[in-house]
Length: 97
Image 1 (cartoon, rainbow, N blue to C red):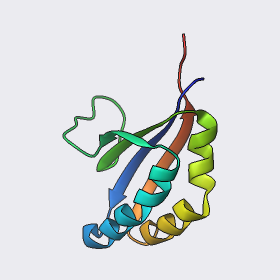
Image 2: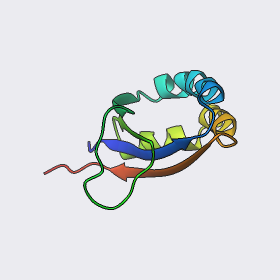
Image 3: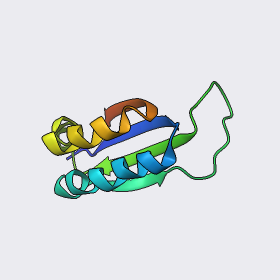
Image 4: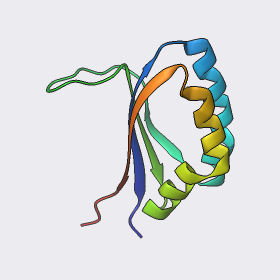
């Protein structure tokens, strides 16, 4: 089965409030088997533009990645994030050669 991924680029305006989102997303991420591959960290933009933070999360399948995003638990967490951050988020199917 091909894995699914979330790829997010995020600008955070209030890190203290954003931490409540991080705490709230832990339960839905655990429920759907999310594994963080990238969570912020040192980076260099070599082409184009980006946001302050890049996050890459792996799921066992594309369907699980979508289900997590659409879950009530994640949407409740997202409601905490939205007032203090601007995000670009793509849910994408992995490449299985």
